Structure formats: structure tokens, C-alpha cells
Length: 423
Image 1 (tube, rainbow, N blue to C red):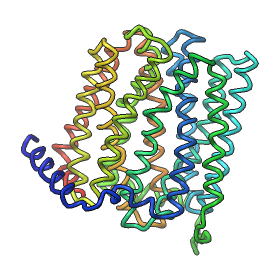
Image 2 (cartoon, helix red, strand yellow):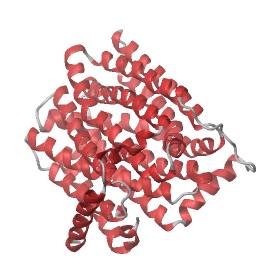
Image 3 (cartoon, rainbow, N blue to C red):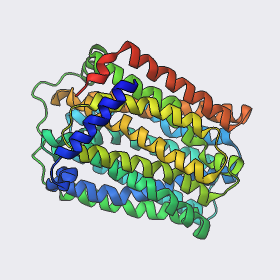
């Protein structure tokens, strides 16, 4: 492993030396449609993270229960298991832009409902569970077309760069949105976080409407929905590399990312802070993820994707285990920066690898399987860590999860060396 790290460091230095002009980091933005998507999404995602941070802290204020935090996470994620594979079929059968406009409009409506209930002081924990479930339904139908749309916005050779910039865009919002949301919550209350999020959806809907895309061409021979669904699942099951990459994503989502559910309780019980510290913790992770995404984008068209992914998959659980022992806010935030960096290496590179290995006609369905595992594992992980934290406390749960993820990453390193050779 140490020898491979030295080789990887050498290749990264060489790649940066040969990368050429700095504009190469932002190659995908030369495509008009992608530039519109990037700008609209950037605005919308700031609002999304303000709402997400505020909603979690509001739940904890209302219930004082880490188990209830897990229940809300479960309610938000369980629609993925029910709907996301069908959403993948829809993403291959109809205009992905049209599908995204529908889902974004639904999310905007739900944000305004949350804002209205909170402004009127009517919001209750059970309202939040229902809103979380409805938002989960919208997200289930949003994820596959969102993933598959990238190849309609840029040339194929710029797809890895576009996915990296998507990660940079997303994690810029993660770096700043929660901190802004925490301050807004502390100064003005959660209702304004929800209202701002509702307004932010106007930007991405306008961007989608302004795009000039080729007319959608449905496949000439379409079977039943069930037949299409089975074809996509079968492709994933029988492609060993895609199957391994998606299983890694599932393990990280189930046991790695579930620690995020505990952040409101962690900021209060472990670090003795409040809403603002909760936002800063989330922002630290986002800042690290942003740095990782920009690094991947700056590397350009590199050929050591698998080795970089392997490093991320080992570094992430090690940092998660370290985080479980920290009790000083500054060190905790610093560790979360590293966690975010490792996390983006895993998700961006696995996403790009799966998409590049998938034929165009199957991409929506394959990415629906990817999204099912990614989003579907989260609610189960949230429910598990919430219940375990209520029983044994937050730090032991995070430590155990880190050990489980490290064990699986080690298994892939030993049993599936082909992952390290992915270009």
C-alpha cells in the first residue's frame, strides 16, 4: 500500500505538471448548457443545505432525541427503495430535463409548506416526518435523471471533468450553506431557512428551461417497464467492476455517511455547542469535499482513477475513527475537512467510473441502481445509528461504523485488485 501511495503521489505531480492551462479545471463550463446547469444548481444547493441543517436542528430542539433524528433520516430515504428503480426507467423513456423540472418544482412546494408551518408556529415532529418522506419521493425521481443528464450537457471526453465540477458545486454549498443556515437559524429562526430554500429553486428551474438540448429521442423498441428495469439491474449484476464499485458506495452510505445524522446531537452533547456549531461541523466536511472535487477537476483527463479511489476508501474510515475520539471543536472541524476530501474521492471517482463503463441506452437505469444503493442505504444507516446512539452514546457508534467501512475497503483492496487499475 505504501509503495502504491508513492507511485500515486508521483503520478499526481506529473499530471499537474502536464495539465497545461488552469482553465482546464473548468473545461465543462465551456459548454453553454452545462454552464446554465452549474449556475442554477449552485444557487439551489445553497438553499437545500440551509434547509437540511435547519430541519435537523429543529427536530432535535423539538424532541431532544438522537433516535428521532434517525427516524427522520429513515423517512427521507425509504422512498428510494420504493421508487428509484422506476425513476431510472423513466429517465431512459422521457426527457430528463422535463423530469427534473417536475421534481424541482415539487421540492420548491415542500420547502414553502415547511416555511409556512414554521412561521405559523404549527410545526410538529410528525409534520417533519411527513415532509421528509415527501421530499424523499421527489429525490427518488430526481436522482437518476440528474446523474444521467450530464452526458447530454457536455462532450463525452469532458464527462469526468463535469462530474468533478458537479462535486465542486455541491460541496461549495455544503461548505457554506450549513454555516449560513446555522447563523440564519440562530438569528431569525428556522422558517427563514426553509423560505430561502423555496426561493432558490427558481434558479435551477429557470436554468433547465433555458437550455438548448437536442430533442429527446425515445428508444425505437421499448419493452415493458418491468423488462426495462430487469435489463438495467441485470447489467449491473453481471458487470463485476460496476457491481464492486456500487457495493463500495453502498457500504460507505450505510455505515460511513450515517454519522452525519448525529451532527446536531454531536454538536450539543459531545462538543457542547448549539445551532451555529452544528452548521460549522457540516461546513467543515463540505470544505474538504470541495477541495477534493477541485483537485479531481484540475487533474484533467488522468489515468489513475482507481488508485485515487482506493486511497479515498481507506482514508475515509480511518478519519471517521479519529473523529470519534475528538472533543475539541477546532480539531473536530479539521478532521471533518479531511473526511470530506476522502468522501469526494470515493463518490466522484466511482460515479465517473460507473458512467464511463455504461452504454448510453442503459445509463439512466444503471444510475438508478447506483442511486438506489447510495440513497437507499442512508435511511437504514440513519435508523441504525440513531437507535444505537440512544443506547450507547454517539462516539462508540461512529467508531464501530469506521471499523466496518475499513474492513470492507480492505476486503476490496485484497480481493478485487482490478479496482486499482481502473483508468
